Image (cartoon, rainbow, N blue to C red):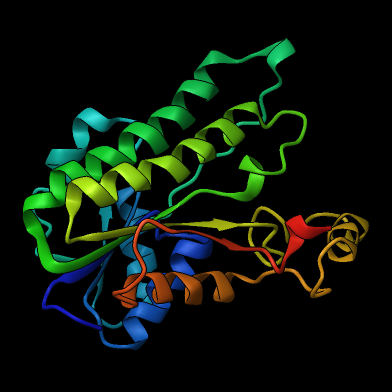
Length: 234
């Protein structure tokens, strides 16, 4: 851990973001987690314990982000892990869902960074979350695949613009114990395991640990890190 600022996990009230907030709190960092609902964010922060507090931020409403983050800073670690799922086939295209996801990740992520640039410590680091749908699309993933592809290139321009502040992207594959996957039929998860060289699915803790690596290692910048057990190789 470096710097004297806090860690901000946007999307830290559940799933991988919450797992990451726990790890950051365990190593003594002051952590702010955000979700769309203030009461839920505060409740999850109390559950995690340590120096964690909750805040309401809605990435889908980027014009409100600056006001929502007005009291945050200085920031040493910034993680944008908030996600939304848009199962949207182009033959039956739903504009509202597509717009929300595009706005969240490609506008909301950028607006959070824009808002906090003056409050990032000199050795600050940023991690944004994409996903492996950019490499392995599926029916209904048009928006998800496109947006995650955008995340993978966004970090390249931002690494140049924000220098010496570092920014990297993390792209999980199928995370077996995540809320999105742990309720799937066993046969579905087994099919993914069979196509993964390690024979195991990534876990939320492993993705969170990989995030810490990107946050901490000062030689890593502008990198898209896949955390999928080699799933794309088979």
